[in-house]
Length: 71
Image (cartoon, rainbow, N blue to C red; front, side, top):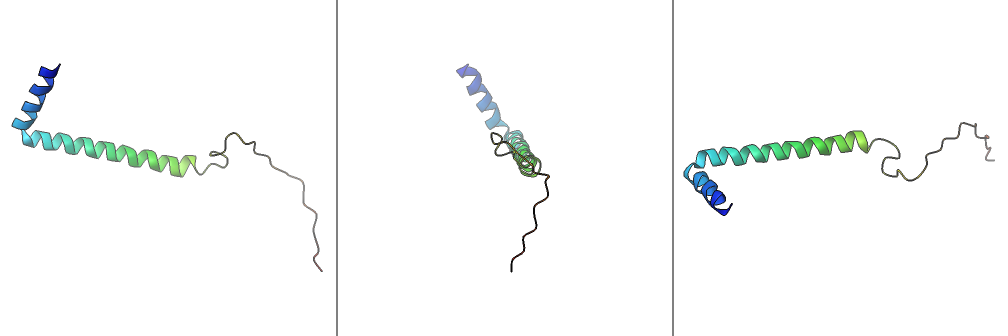
């Protein structure tokens, strides 16, 4: 396996243009994936009420509240 890795690195050093394009493509792909997943988390998941506190029950009260008069 070490021989295969040495051969791969030798080939990458012989072709610097291909190496640069491969590294740039990987960097752009990883960066784009990170941006998309961060956007999905911030817009879709964090916007849901109770998504961060899934262990706490969510209750709603539909009864009207009595009016208070402050005099």
